[in-house]
Amino acid sequence: MKNNNDYSAQAASRLQKVKCFVLDMDGTIYLSSRLFPFTKPFLKKLEETGRSYCYFTNNSSANHLDYVRKLDRLGIPADPAQVFLSTQVIVEEMRQIHGEDSFFIVGTPNLVEAFRQAGLKIFDPAGSEDAAPAHERPDVVILGFDTTLTYEKISRACKYLRHGAAYYGVNMDYNCPVDDNGVLDYIPDCGSIAKLVEQSTGRFPDFYGKPSRHTLDYIIRHTGFAEEELAFVGDRIYTDIAIANGTKALSVMVLTGETQMEDLDRYPYRPDLIVPSLAELTELL
Image (cartoon, rainbow, N blue to C red; front, side):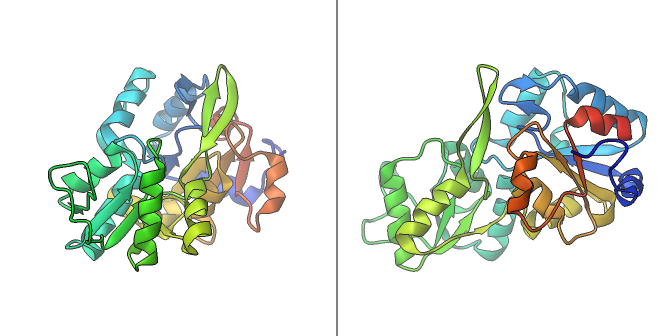
């Protein structure tokens, strides 16, 4: 494992030039509803050294206000403008490229409501006053982290995809870390649901959350910082770290969530910096 003495001089130099840290949430600053003890000192150090920070979660099961309130309950109040979700990325871009189309959404009511509030047309095949006629089909299928997933929803999505609907995913995470009585565990996330759909239809979505370029560009637009001024900090190599791969942004992996050192050989890229937790990153600032 890399430590203070053996991480690269290049990473050290780049770390000092970072102006904004983009922090993953679950597995990085907290686990489920348990704030890590090193989170507050890390945030304090960022503020003391004049650095900005924001939060970005790929989890689309809750809404923006839910996360703002959760941070407040955990004792780290955040300005709503500091909190970003993968949901916001995909909604913003769907308004641009599919603004007049109808959407069938495999996701929680929070995800559906985010599309509705953005003025996008929701295709509802049954169960509401604006239910679509049986012979009609949606223009677009959206796949999110659906903790309310039913067989009916997934089978309808597969049917629509076989008939040519456009297809997008919110986030590619295969697992979501959870705190099981103080022990790190996981539940299936959006990427795992996408694999189910792929086996049935042969189709896999273009994802909009981390590590997509869609998210990086969104962060640049909404924070005002340049690519080389950003550092992405997270626990999942194929999302939090991969978003910076091949870019001018810095990547910092913590080992408090999904990815561990033994997992690294499965990937063709590496984080710029690996630390056990935010505690060690605090010492490097």
